[in-house]
Image (tube, rainbow, N blue to C red):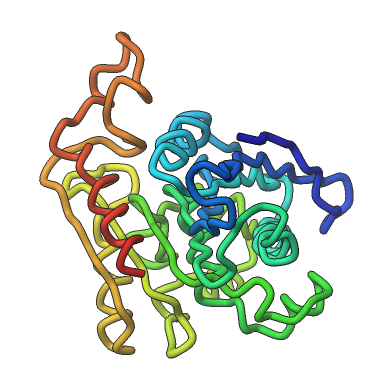
Length: 270
C-alpha cells in the first residue's frame, strides 16, 4: 500500500487543498494488472472544517475491501463557492490522469461525502457539466465526471429544510447563489447514479434533504438507492467504535452500521 499527500493548485487566494491518497499495490502472486474502483472522499464539517471521523477510518474500511481511496481536505470558510468544487473536480481528474500508475479503473470513480461534504460531492455530480467548471479546472469536463455518488446524511437543499450554517459558510449573503446550490433543483439526465443514506430523526440536517433529492432523481429517471434508518444522530460516520470514543456513546448506532455493507454491494453492481 502506498500513501501520499498531494497539495492541489490554488483555486482561491491563500487556499491550497490537500489530497490524502490511500492506494493499494498489486501483487504478482494475485493479480499484477488489477484495476480498482475508486472513491474520492469528502468529509463533512459544515464548510467550516473537515471531520477526522469521516476521513481515515472510512478510507481504511474501503481499502480493506479492495478500493482505492483519496481523501480531499477541501478548502472551507472563508473560502466561498466554487473553490471546493474546483478542488474536487481537479482531484477526480487526477485519478483519471494517474489511472495506470495508481491501478484505478477510470470508469468507476465515485465521489463520497458526508453532511456538507455530501453537498460538495453532489455538487460535482449535478454541476460537472457546467462550462465554468471546466474553464476553472483547465481540463475537459469528462476528465472529472463522477461515475457515481455516495451521500451520507447529505446537505442538499437551501430551502425550508436547509442546514443554514453550511450555506452561510459556502455562499455568504448571496441569496441567488444560495438558491442555485439547492441541489434537488440541479438533477438532470447528466446526474450519475447515487447511493444515499440518512436517519429519520436527524435533528441537524433534516431527512427531508435526502427525500427531496430522491424525488428529484425519480423525476429525472436517474438510478438511486436510498436507505432511511429510524434512529441516529447526525455525523455517525461508521456508527461503531472506530469512529466514536467512550465519551461519545451517541455515535454508536448498530442498526446504521450496515450502511457500509449496503454501499459496498451497490459499488459491486455499479
